[in-house]
Image 1 (cartoon, rainbow, N blue to C red):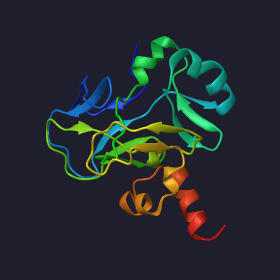
Image 2: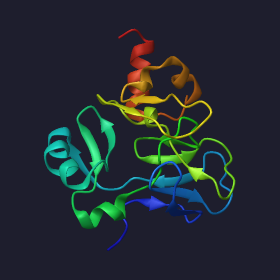
Image 3: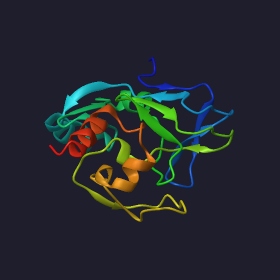
Length: 172
């Protein structure tokens, strides 16, 4: 079966110190170079919570208030995973809704991570174990609202969250 998600040929999946498996650079990657593109099916929140998460776990990327892109079968799960773990000192950002790009030049051997604040607008709170010097210790699905993260990740939020940030800035 064909992969649902794209991973750059400059990457490989292997064991991660952050969590399980992670995505790593096998060659230098230039700032703004495409590293991964999430594939899958567009599903509603109801379908995600009722049918997908109980069976496959957290496999989605949010693309709007009630829409997500995700695999829907066990077979598709592995074919859609990006293995980009969370880090509070992320190397990847988002272009559009599902394209992950390098936020800076990345050296071969580095784990490729993104900050969930760039993609998530959900109600959750979890302990962070990324180990970054600037680790927030607790992650929430509303971290995108934090001014310091909006400044740090400017230009690298999903288009969905960038619109929400612009509306907040406009006072709506």
